[in-house]
Amino acid sequence: MTKLTLFCFTLGLCFACASKQFKQNQHAVIRINQLGYSPQGIKVAVWGSLHQEDIDSFSLVNARTEQKVLTIQAGKSYGAYGPFQQSRRLNFSNFTDTGSFYILAGSTQSPTFRIAPEVYRGTADFVLRYMRQQRSLFNPFLQDSCHTHDGFTLYASKAGLPDSTKIDVGGGWHDASDYLQYSTTSANAIYHLLAAYRDFPAVFTDQKQANGLEGANGIADVLDEAKWGLDWLLKMHPEPHLMFNQIADDRDHAGMRMPAEDAFYGRAYERPVYFIDGRPQQRGKFSNNTTGTSSTAAKFSSAFSIGSQIFTAIDGNYAHQLRVKAESAYHFANIKPGVTQTVSVKSPYIYAEDNWVDDMELAAATNLQMTGDIKFKNEALQYARQEKITPWLETDTAAHYQWYPFINLGHYELAKQLDGKHREEIISYYRTGIEKVWTRAKQNAFFRGVPFIWCSNNLTVSFAIQCLWYRDLADDESYAELEQSNIDWLFGCNPWGTSMVYGLPHNGDNPTDPHSAFTHLKNFPIDGGLVDGPVYGSIFNQLIGIELVNPDEYEAFQSDLAVYHDDYGDYSTNEPTMDGSASLIYLLAAKEHELLGGAPIKK
Image (cartoon, rainbow, N blue to C red; front, side):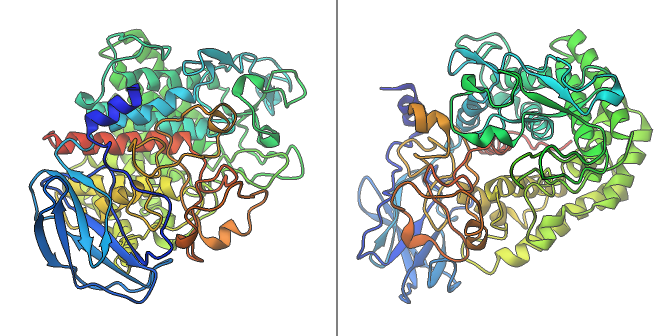
C-alpha cells in the first residue's frame, strides 16, 4: 500500500470514487462533496438533468445495508444552469448519523460518500505537499537543486545596482507549472501559511525537516514551509532601499521542462531579477501599468510582521530580523503609493494588479499587532475605508489577478483588534461584499456567485474564507450554507463532478492530467495542487495556444457559461498554482479545526 493510499484509507476516502465517463443514456447526475460531510454540518448535494425531466424527492441510502434511511422533498427547482436544463439542491443537513451513504433521486444515483466528523482530517497537510514540491533551490521532492544561479538585476541602477549585477536570490517557490517567482504571490502564500498555524496550530503535524526531507525537527511542517518563503523574501529585500518583484519572465513559457533544465535568458542558468522602481517596465513589446511601490512592498511587510510574532517563541533573533524588515518594507511601500505589476516580454499575460490600499491595510493591521503603535490602527482604518469591498465581489469580473489578494485580508486582521463601532464598521464591509455574491449565487442550485475568470478556484477559496471570517467575527450564521457550497464546489459539487485538487480524494474524480511538467514529462504526482478551475466559455475561446491533447471526458457538461478540462493542453483551467494551494491550506485547516471541536478563532 502506498503512502498516498494509506493516507486516504485513513481518511476513509477509498470508496468515494466517481467515474469520469458519462454514460450516453444517462440524463441526470448528482454532484457531491467527495470528501464527505460532517454529522452536524450543512449537507447538500446537487441534482442536475441534461433534459427537461425533474424530480420531487430523493432518498439517502446506507451503502452497507442498502436500506433507505431518509426520504424527503427535493426543495425548489432552480431550472437551467450551465449544461443542465433542470437542477435542484438536495439538502439532508438534518440527518446526523455517521457512515457511508449514497443518494437516489429518481433513477439517478450519486457516488458513495461518508458522513463523519473527521472528513477533513489531514487535508491541510496533504495540500502542503504541493508547496514543498514547488520549492526552488533545493527541491525535496526531486532531491535535487535548481535555479542555483539566480540572478542578475534589472531596473535597479538608480538604487546603486547597474543592470546585470549579480545578486543571490535563490530559494522560494515556483509560481505554478512555470518556474517564474513572484514576490506578490509568495508573500500572500506566506501570510496564509502563517495565519493557518497561528489560528489552528493543532491541525498540523511535524514529519519533515526544514529542508523538506523526511524527519521531524520539532517545528510544524507548515512553519517550515512558511520559513522557506520568508527566507526568500529576506533575499528579495536585502537592504532598506532594495526590493525585487519577480525572478524570470514569460520567456519561461518557451517549453515544458523540469526545473533544473532552465536556461532561457541569455545568461546560462542565471535569471533576471526585477527591481521595484514604482514605474512602468517594458522588456519586449508589452509594458505593464505599474504606478507605485505599495502593493508588493506592503505584502512583504505583512508577511514579515506576522512571521515576527509567530517566531518570537521559536527563534528570537530571527523574529527580530523579521520585525526590522517589516518596518523597512512598510517604509518602502510608502515611497510611491500605487500598484506594482509584473513584467512580461513576449505575451500580454501579466499579474495586472490594480489595487493597493487593501495591502496597506493588511500591513498596517499586522504592524499594529506586532508593535502596538496606535498610528497603525489609524492608518489601517483609513485604508479600509478606501476599499470597503474587494471590487470583483461587486463587478462579477476582473482581469488576471486584477484585485489581489482575492479578498481583503486586512479587514480580518484589523477587525480582531477593534471594538465598538469601528469593529462593526469593518465587519459590515465583509457582510456587504458577501451579500453582493449571494445575490447572484441564490439564483442557481450550486449557489455559485463567483465569476468564471482565470483562477476561479482561487477566488472560490478566498470567498469561502471571507464567509468563514465574517461568521466568526459577527457570530452570524446567515451565510454558512453559501460558505459550505463554495467548499463543496472545490471537491466535486460542481457541473463536472470533479475535485479541483490533485490527489484529493485519492479514489475520487480529481485532476489526473494537469498542465504540469512533473506529471506530463515524468509522471510524478503533484499531490495537493489546486488547479485554476473553470473559466467562461468566452474566455477559453479567446486564449492563445490552447489545444486539447485528449478527448474531453467532461464534454457533456461543458457550456457557454463555463468550461473545465482535465487535459494537459488547457493551461487556463487545469494548471495548479502555488498561491491558490496555500490559501486552500488555511481553509482546510479551518474546517478540520472546526469539525474536531476547536474553539472559535476570533479574539
